Length: 89
Image (cartoon, rainbow, N blue to C red):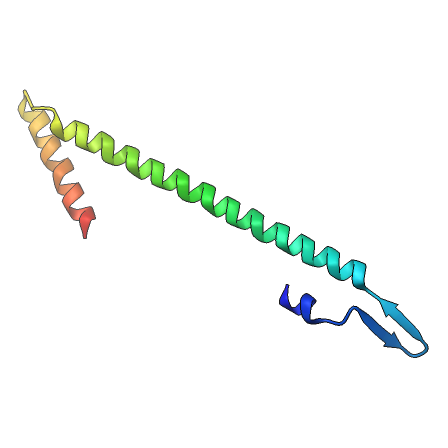
């Protein structure tokens, strides 16, 4: 976009002066819209990723809060706890 902004709107070509102001303005407008779309897409993806991470944390906390009644459940919670501890680093 900076290249387009820095270009002259009019260019003399032999005995004709080419006016490209409409093209320049259109390209700048398209570039601005494209950048806004990229940012909107990045924001949307980031929100989705953060929500997924929050849901995973919430589910893990709830799972670890429940008192185990069987040995299998205790082993599962211990493995889950170890996975969480490994992810902290």
